[in-house]
Image (cartoon, rainbow, N blue to C red; front, side, top):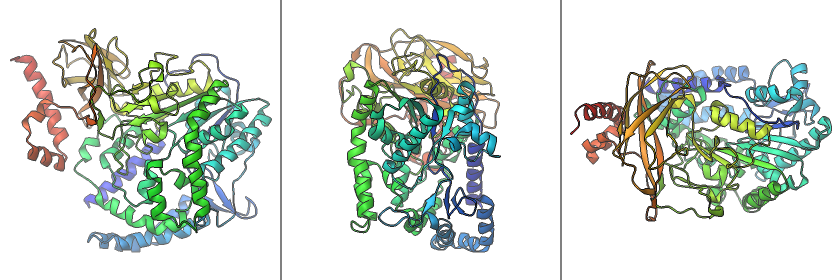
Length: 635
């Protein structure tokens, strides 16, 4: 029953995350471009058909969920038996049942081992007229054929629906194939709109397609602004975990993902640390080999495998003769097109194009890969940056790999080196931003819209309001801390005030305590001050900021709010920028803050509390009490 409740909770929260609407506070300023916008959407956004015509053909992607439900109900008895056998650690029966439904359902999408489609599939339309928002609104009764409806509605407020077009492609094929389809669509939109250029707004898989398009066709000069948000340029970590059947779901990360998607102002993530759903991993890892013959030869899945893991996956899963054509195409993407992108992007920018990337960081891959990511795509693959493993940072005194003209490219938390990025001066990193959540954070939403619709921001130095590194202000984070008078994520000797902002849309917040490891700071905190949604308070402090640079201190803000979970906390890493640089050290160190509660624990007790999922709760309660005990009775 406990497992069933966990599954139901996860499904309900996931559905909520897909239907939530974000706040639209904040407006784009500057001269709005009159170029049409092409939306290049995320993975599997295109309906595919089998048959001679759309009227008589079979929809093979863009599934009718009433039909899917009907099939599930038809097999419910078998599934019930499967759940019963699985209780005795046997996942084979239930995965056989699921695979026996999925494989026929996906049969028409099957590709041969060489990557070619077994069946001849079609899209509804591929020309600009039939993919134009204004046409679709007038001639379609639903929003099915409009991509990223929520975002396009806001874009339309500035340029009108008549100037928005929706790209679609056969998403099963590789990035190179889809990029060719995008080039054709760009030409169609130019002809239909009468404009000599377009603006591209790309999301996730659309980012990989757009990056490939720019590398192969960017020299045509058909694009003014290209904005790639949470892009899968170099692949997606989740693809390798699935292909290799090595999924190890991180339930706490998954719940945080859903909290961000729903913009939930309660914090449940720390409550599930003890409820690791390992049986879900067993199910998925048993299922995927059984459906691999149906979907495992999609070229796009192989382009999603990151370069560092590509050879191992290829050697394990592909036959060098049967899959020779697929291997050739994916090799070309991994070893020719992808490495050429920095040079190709630089040429495009030199010729007057604006290319921008917005990426999420500070999260683990939900399927278990221990790399810095937006939950789905590793930050390294999304941006080309060099990253420390998830949960770690570069050691004190770290020096960036490339000089970048003397510009600092190391993140405040010292976990990202942007000097190796595809676009070192045109990539924005947002710590705590999850995949697909760009529109649900006012900072990234306005940045994204400004980059797309104006020429006002040409690089990370154009506007101090949009620094290269930023902590997410999604409502689910509840609070955001910064040192007054310092750059985002930094603190220096002149700092004497901590600014705490309430990122919620509805809930009032009170700061309950503040902990700063490695620094002895006394905060003049009044816990009875209400911080209204979107408002900030300034908290003075006394104490010395060491005369040092290139080391990190962690600030944890504990807060109280009138919600189901009345207490919570957020920790942010701040880089010292106050004088002599720390001596360079090698390797990585943990990002986990050291709090007073840690001083009570030996290794065994620490391990027990982590296993039970209680460390966060006990630590939070103890540290709040300790803060006020120390403040009221100083030693």
